[in-house]
Image 1 (cartoon, rainbow, N blue to C red):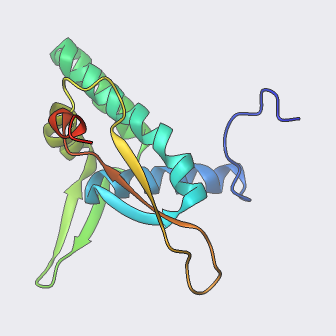
Image 2 (image 1 turned 90 degrees about the vertical axis):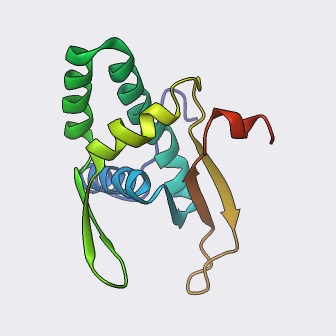
Length: 144
């Protein structure tokens, strides 16, 4: 029985799991959608939503709380991501993007910032794949 055994192990050591979670959250926030295995997407969803909630509460409570929230988020995710465009490489500060663009977008939304869409299985190893993405805004959820 799995009583009181919360979390996903993903056949990795604890350090590898922590690094994977930090990288996936940073990639999700930088790209706003990523394709990964279904198990990793299910592990990622609550962690990413928790980070967005921390940022949202920090912004709502004022300047001192926002600074504290930035430090908490910065400690829990990898801060910089490099995006490749056809012309150049762009370095994104994920924490800044989270607080300037993503958290204000969900100001009135009480949770449910991500969605998981199942995709066809991967060709090489037949792994279950999924697309995890940030939902657009609170107005879009009423149409679904």
